[in-house]
Amino acid sequence: MAQKATIYKVELSVSDMDRHYYETHKLTVAKHPSETDERMMLRLVAFALNADEQLEMTKGLSTDDEPDIWQKSLSGELETWITLGLPSDKIVRQSCGKADRVIIYAYGGNPAETWWDKIKNSTTRFDNLSVFNLTQIETAALAGLADRTMRLQVNIQEGEVMVSVGEGMVYLTPVAWKAADRRG
Image (cartoon, rainbow, N blue to C red; front, side, top):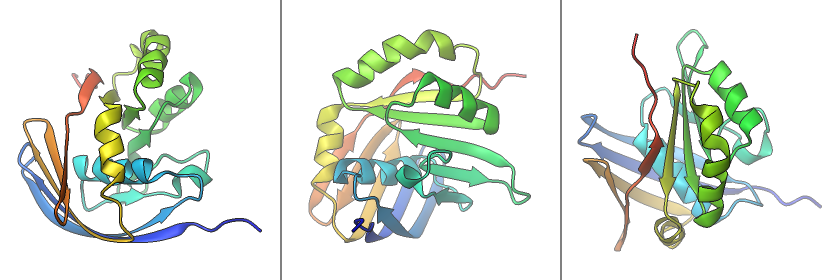
């Protein structure tokens, strides 16, 4: 019998001083049976870093042709495509063709660095692509904050991210490996 997703109820309060965005989102997050707490928590951080009232969690791991998070315009155009992990060159190319803005949050330590070394030269032509890396120590610490019912507070200032749940607190510093070039 196939395992079912585990449902998490999250009240995500975002205080983003860099974008002047202050809002609370009530999210129901389905954690796929093969998804780790680390990855699920990183999805929530990626949501907070790009928070908008149109931003949505997708089916994620259970669907190959969807990102982890996306934002569509009111008329249905794909504006933002957010993926976690180390997508293939083909997936990066396809997603950059589908959305106005593509963001990849790489994590996992040495495998992430090896992935980026292999793929970075092929990404230079994508002006709509941003790639960020989070250290393995930071993302592993996130896993310890996971709970089935969470009040998650994310504060963002000068690129630094503070995530807290109850008494637990983790600091993250996403490092930009590639920034989107939106000139013209």
